[in-house]
Image 1 (cartoon, rainbow, N blue to C red):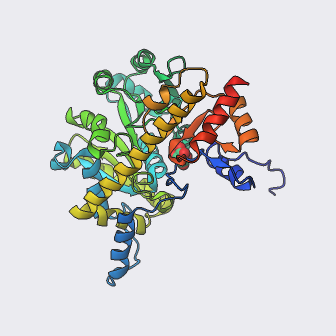
Image 2 (spheres, rainbow, N blue to C red; image 1 turned 60 degrees about the vertical axis):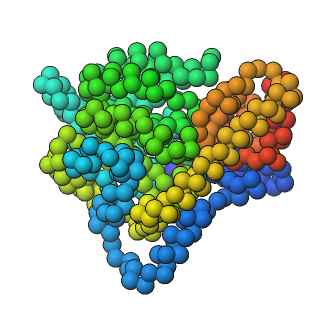
Length: 412
Ligand code: LMR
C-alpha cells in the first residue's frame, strides 16, 4: 500500500549532517547544524551536566514513574524564573503557566496548537473571525522548521520583512511596516536573541518600538528563545526583550530550549511559558495545555529536565554553568574575529564586517546556493544552502580552510 510513495527530501538542516557523514574526505568540515563543538571539533558535554547526572545516579530514591502531563514541576518553576527573571511581577502574581516540552520544537508545537484551538482576537469585530484560522507572522527568513511547525499546529503562516541582504542587517523599516499592516490581534513569532539564521537582532531601542507597536495593535508575541546566554554570554541580557514585554503587564508566549545553552541537544528538554493577565486565567490555560499534550505524547521525559533542575536549583552549579556558557559564547566570538581576519589577510573581495557584527551561533554569509555547493564539492565544507554557517563548528585549525574556500568561491 505504500509502494506509490515518493522519496521525501532530507531536512534542509539535519540533512547536511547526513551528507557530511557520507563524505570520506579527511578535511571535511560540518558547519551545517547549530551544535557546539570544541576547538578539537568534538561535541561538548558541560562539566556541570556531568556533575548533575552524577548526583542523579547517586540518588537511589529516584524512580522512573511517569511525570505529570505538564512535566517536572520544579523544572517548570525554575525555567520560568530563568527566562522571566527571579523578580518578575508575572511570576510573583502567579500569572505564568509553564509546561515542560520536548525542547524548542516541542514547545513551539504545543504553543502553536494551543493558540490554534483557543486564541481569538479580543475585540468584538474580530469575534467574527473566530471560526477562521488564526495567523502567525514569522520573520523572513527564519529557522526552516518554524513554518512547518505552525502550519501543522493549525495556524496560517505569513511572513514579515526582517533581513536586508544589501546591508546584511535588520530591515527595521520593513519589519515595522509589515507588523503595522498585520490584522489586529495576529500572532507574531519573535526570536528572543541570536536570530536564526541571520545572526541579526534588533537593538533594545528597536525592541522598544516593536513592543509599543505590537501592544498598540494587540499583536500576540510568541518568543522563540533557543539561545539564552549564547548571544551575549549573559543569561539576563539575552532575556531582556522578553522581559520588556512582560513588564508592560501584557500577555505572551515563550518557548525555551536547553539544547544549546546546556548542550542538552539529544535530551530534548525545553519549556513553554504563557504569561497571562491573571492567576485564575493561567490556571485554566494550563488545564487546556494538558489537553493538547496528553494525546500528543502523554507526558515528557524525566532525565533532561532533572539535569536542568539540579543545575538551576544549586547556586554553585548555576554559577559554574554560567561560566561554561560564557566560555562557549566567547569561543564563538573569537571564531568570528579569526574568520574575519583570515578573509582580510587574503584580500577577499567584499565587505565581511557582518561576520563580526552578527550575533550568536550563526553567520549569514551572503553566499548563494551555487557558491555553497561549490564549497561542498571542492572543499568538503558543509553548510545550509542559504549560506548560513555555524560558527560553533569552526576552530582555529579549520578557519584557514574555510577562508580559502570563501576566497576561492568569490574570486572564481
Ligand atoms: C539549527 O538551526 O541548526 C538548529 O536549531 C538545529 C535544528 O534542529 O535545526
